[in-house]
Image (cartoon, rainbow, N blue to C red):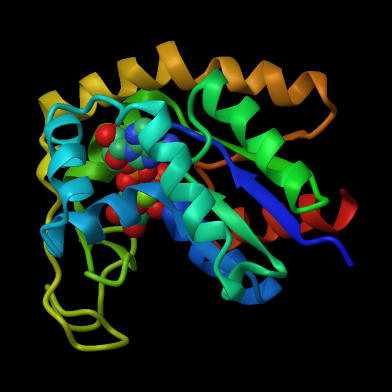
Length: 217
Ligand code: AP5
Ligand code: MG
């Protein structure tokens, strides 16, 4: 069977990472987050990490060619042979086209694009209360707290706040999203792949709606 690729679309703080982890587990697919991959490179002090950091800390996008190359390398690994839940990629028109070409090489195509809708005013609050684990698991001090404050439930590692979650950087990330990523809503709608999901619901309900969209795709 051709591999399955699901693209989670939505603004910063919509819940892409939260949902991607849950959906990937249910569907036994790999969760591929370009943000997590860049942060991993940053932690390991690779050249790619150093390059990406300059953009990420300002809330700008990393250049398309670098990002596409990284995704191609990741999706070519054996653990992705059944497909992946994409979180934060594609997020420009050029990336979306490059992704379509890449999936052709894998004899596949995007299956469905759940678009997690959340109004701007909610996003800043979500991101300022977000606590992250090194593994990419996501918590919120109020909406999704870990059992022990600042400690990851699964592996016990310390949680941290992201450098780019300061309110002024978040606002810039939202502007960048509206300018460069929001056009993908129509790109995927025109292909009949977009399904709007109400991202203001509780986490479990959002997951249920996304699973339904996948089932009906
Ligand atoms: P990336 O890491 O992808 O960040 P983002 O897109 O800005 O999205 P976030 O991770 O901030 O939000 P999310 O939607 O994952 O929400 P989450 O689940 O955490 O990218 C970071 C940077 O990397 C970019 O700015 C760019 O520089 C670079 N980059 C990445 N990909 C790139 C690409 N393709 N091209 C170029 N550059 C790229 O949830 C947020 C909070 O809300 C959490 O605390 C969570 O617990 C809480 N929450 C989630 N759901 C709910 C709910 N239903 N109710 C209440 N609270 C909730
Ligand atoms: Mg995320």
